[in-house]
Image (cartoon, rainbow, N blue to C red):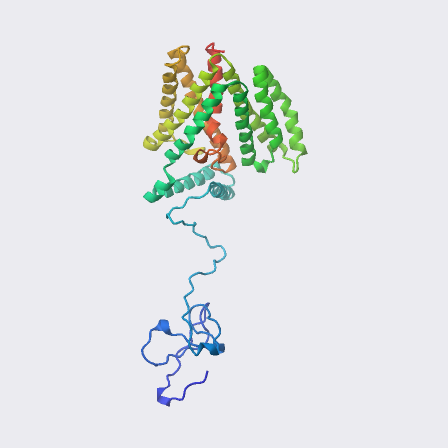
Length: 414
């Protein structure tokens, strides 16, 4: 573009060259006094028919434009630099609800980083998990009222899932016989799948685990404790062959995880079948389940309201001693109160049974929490929504069922 014919005194000396840098023109700029205008309107054709602006390059000028150009919008997005952290996505409600899969992934990543920094120190891993849970609690506390209404409270979500699940459990217990066995077996198979998924790096055998829990539960239904013990012994070589012949072979970790699923899940739910088949077995199973789940609810609410002293920060940072004590009292009171409507269960026997359930159930909960921390996951599954998976719901019940069986056996009920 040629310079217009102007007197020498009307020409303005060129100013200093613009600094060289990313996103800026490297040509010297001329400020021309052509009248009043705002800097934002400073657009015009530069060399090779392009705009000379601080924004993105405009389209080339053409004769059809008649020396006028459309205004160029400023650049609102930029390329993310390597290593730059991306903020979490936000939705229209202003909340950040991470899917369960993303939450599990973040937990595993933080645990892995803690292990690399500390050489596998349990204190560092527990600290990372506790910090992440405190962060999630903080996110929950700053949600807007509309978000709380749309997502509902955690306790309300628990109730919405627990009520139909409890009705289904009562239906299975009331039916007994093959219906109860099939229902228990379905939960056992799902639990084995969740366990093998949590410890997939160990390469356990899902087939051997499923076959093992099936054999133990069917043996308990058909032949009692002795048959269940025989089935457990027979599964050991089957587990070895299944893990050794798999690709890739799992080795000792694979055998250990597979046998853990068979013993933990199969033996516990096999005892549920044994207890249901005994005298007044349906009522005892209901008492054990009521004491377990209401005791867990009492521990949850008590810990939220009065919790101060951590119970096991390395295993489950959110559990407190106060919550444990309130849960124990709630479980014992629940079983005793249920015994008032069962003339075949004395008050003393109900208190003994309730105390066994109240002690065994928290141990089962801590046991599963310990496994989840080792696996680096928050929940074992998603079958029960906010309650997690089958293992998350039945962890306490599986310990309580075994304790209830042997207490009822000692009291002469079997």
